[in-house]
Image (cartoon, rainbow, N blue to C red; front, top):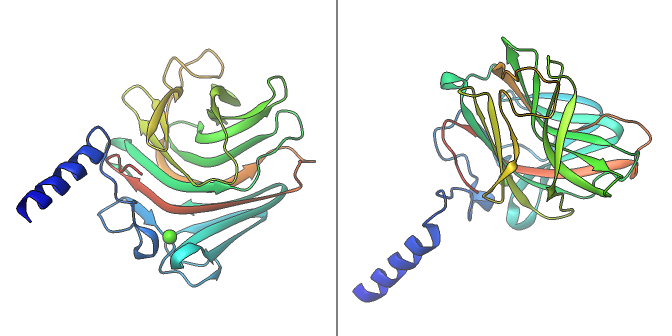
Length: 257
Ligand SMILES: [Ca+2]
């Protein structure tokens, strides 16, 4: 028995070495909000149906947020929008020590836009005080010139202008659960993104390196984080969008997937 346990221990160490600890693996219906986090929502305690909670706000226009039962009793958030609508879960009164924090969510998008040209969508927005930049760590764009649909860090509303730095190294994947993580660090106003635990060095922004006007990019002191979906142009293909989100967490340290 001892050798079996030693072998199992070695196996577990081998699996986790080189990656951050997982607290989502096997989470399913037991939920993932088991640690002290700045914000956490696994949708397990909410009644199925139209989302309503005192823990976060709802920001919609031609869109809905619905708590649904997925596989094995796990509950998830179904985000549904029509055309250029929006539907966001909104974390208000957010405050991270030193304005430095990580975010994580699991995500499945039924279909991304293939029209109109340059259709632009946002899934995560961070805003606050001290800078008017609306920071969009998770978003993307349909690029008809490639063609393809790609993830890219972006921003709007501030001195750097309206930009989405989509990268061909980050094509979207439809109808598949993926884990997205992001980090906002005021040290050099850096945004970083991981997909399924893998960092993509092209999905980033910093004070001097970003996709906007040639002026410094400055992160706000973040007090609001929105997670969901918005598409900005009308006349979309498809005409409606559906995505499912689970295991949302905002934390002072990286959580992994
Ligand atoms: Ca869940």
